[in-house]
Image (cartoon, rainbow, N blue to C red; front, side, top):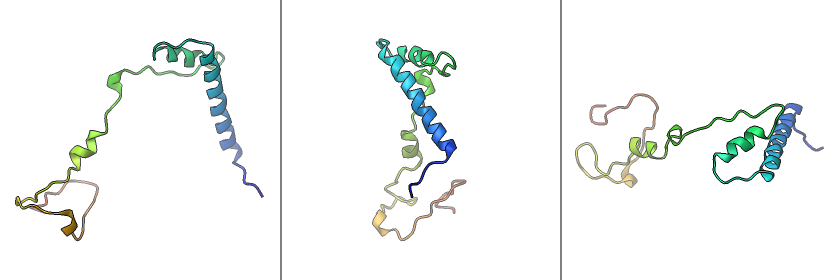
Length: 105
């Protein structure tokens, strides 16, 4: 017996497809030269129930790429200044919460 999606998921998927088709049809009849032109295309794709478009500036986008690299940098020396190798470690402790200094515990 074939499995079918629940009716609510089916309606949501159908709604997303319809919205995409409406934007696609609007885009076919318009000329896009600048990224700002997409705002009007999406906004005008559905005249009865217009899509809510939020214009964003470059400052609104955050760069999360460097965040883990800064916080979780692999040190090449221990607290005493002695070099260490990852292959020599027998256990690692990863935890959430406050940071603990390795020297004082």
